[in-house]
Each structure stands twice: as C-alpha cells, then as structure tokens.
Amino acid sequence: MSGTGSSVFDITQSLGADDAGRIKRLLEGGVKIPAQPRVLDELRKLMLRKEMDVRPLARVINQDPGLAAMLFKVVGNSAYRQHQPFDSVEQILHAVGTRQTFNLVQAISLSGLGEIKKNRQVYEAFWARSHTIAQLAMLIADERQAVCNILPDQAYLAGIFHDCGVPLLMQRFPAYCTEMRLGIPGQWIDLAEEDRKFNADHCVVGYLVARHWCLPEFICDAIRYHHAIGELGAHAARSMVAILQLAIEIYFVDQQIPNPEWKAVSDEVLPELGLNEDALPELIDIVLERFHGASAVA
Image (cartoon, rainbow, N blue to C red; front, side, top):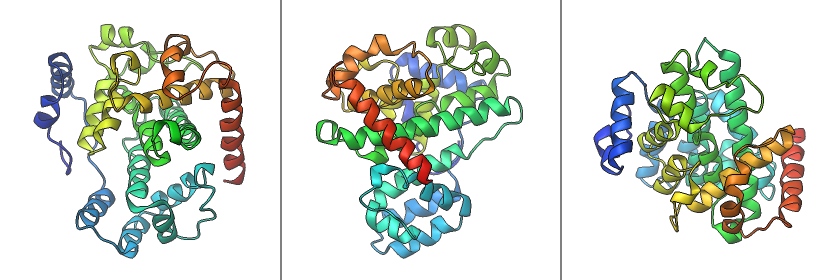
C-alpha cells in the first residue's frame, strides 16, 4: 500500500488472529486499498505543523474544484444551519473548524476514488446510499450530541466509510455484485453468506481502509463492528455504531423498504442514543424533515 497511512503490519497488530488472517488473505488475493489523494497528504502536513492560518488550507482544498464543490454541498446539511450560508472554503474552515473540515474532506475524497466500469450503476447507487446514510448520521449526531458526544463531521466520516469495503470487494470479485444481490432494491449484504462465498468481510476491509487513512481509532472500530454492536460492550465506538444503525434504519424508512437488521439491533441502539420505541417516530420525522429541507436547498 502506498500513501501516508498505517502499514498493514501496524494495523494487523491491533486485531485478533481471525481478522488479521483475513486481512492477509484479502491483500494476497488482490484486494487493493486506495491510497489517499495528494490533497489529503498536503492538508495533513499543514495540520501537523499546527497551521493556524486557514488560507493555505483553503488553497489546497480549492486545488480540486470537484472536492470543494462537494464540501459546500455537505456543509449545506442542516447540521450546520447555525453557520450557513457559506461563501468560501475559508469561511467553512473558520466556522466548522479545521479538524472537522478535514474529516469531511477525507470522506468526500474516499467516495470519489476507485471508479469501476462493470456494474457501474450499482457502484453509483452504492455511493449515493453511503452519502445519504452519512448525511442522516450527521443529523442524528446533531440531535443527540448531548447524549452521545459525537460531532456531525465524525458521524459523516463514519457514514461514508462504514461500507467502503463493498466497492473494493466488487472490484476484486467479478461475481460479488450478483451473488450479494446488490442491484436489487432493499437488498444488502448477509455477512455469513459473504464469508462463505468469498472468504471475505466488508467490515474488516472497511476497517483496513480507515486505519490506512488514519481515521480516529473509535471510528475505525465502529466501521469494523457496525453490524455487531453487541460485541462492543462499553467501547468508545458503541455510540457511533448506534448512530450508524439508526441512520440506516431511517434510510430504509425513507425508501419505504423494510430494514432486515433493525429488529435485531434496536434493543441495543435505542438505549445507547437515550431513546425508546415511543420517542423514535418523532426523532425520525425530525431527521427526515431536516434532511429533505437541506436537499431542497442544495
């Protein structure tokens, strides 16, 4: 792997034997972990120098017009309503914060990498789904920040990265998209079937990408366990996984499609977010109203 992220050796040292072995097999089998783009390398170097002037940071972001345009779209989310409207990247950096803006840029950068020709429609639909779940996660974090202490930018970062192993496995295994039925509305990956057919786990691949891109450790762990909140106990990642799972549930509600996973996780997710079944419909209405309001403005 190239880039400034962690080495595979460093990453596997923090994993159990099963996950470490799985990562080794996937990499030996040809799964390619995307390197961070130059913009992120330059931004990270400036931040490591504790650059207080936002102008050089803004200049680096503005080198990539597509990235800058997407950044404006993301901060149009009503999670940042107290700061809007934004007229420049410098203003975003001042209002949102440099670390928070960097998190958003990382997420945007990942979703622009690794385009594939085969199953292109499914690939584009995948990233549209990830962006929607990430935006919903931002709003949940904003609504429940007093309970969870998760910032909207952190939730967006986790939302974009949580399933990022899927397109990498699509690239590696020609039959993955068909076998996992990714082109069928409402269908998502069965982890046991994924492991049985491909000896792979998109959660582990996503964790590997997140560590390589130097995401905060609790976000990396949330990506690894986003389908296994029960395994986290009192872990720092637990609230993030709860936010991701609720964002996925709200995504299914908005699509008017049943969520096959929600019943199994709701008893752990709701208390983690300070909610119960009676309070949930109101929160869903609030989040969707804010989400669609931001989409209409954008």
